[in-house]
Length: 127
Image 1 (cartoon, rainbow, N blue to C red):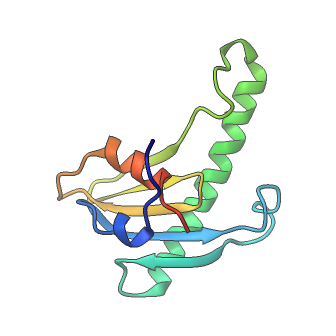
Image 2: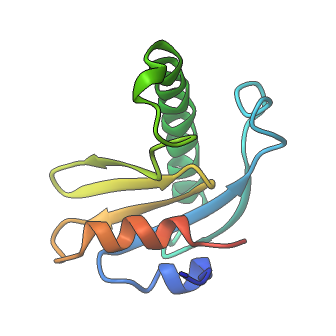
């Protein structure tokens, strides 16, 4: 079984430029109340971490809604409660990876990193 890791440990992994963790009141209220910054690593300014947090929270919220629609529409293909662990948006210079556990990271694409490993580890980040 995989052990939880800290945000600080995750922030030292190859390719991680900066990472942020946040909280929401509840899953149902996350669409009407803004997320609350927990902590961040790697960014020089808190403002950059807040921008990443808000982008990742909106991405996870919208993706979650789409995935739930799909599992309700095609229940015969439903094999797990929620089949997605992380979301990744690949960019030219940086990529964004986020988990549904309210953790996100900006990845530096000039660094050789293992996306499968980062996807697993971001899901293990504990508050």
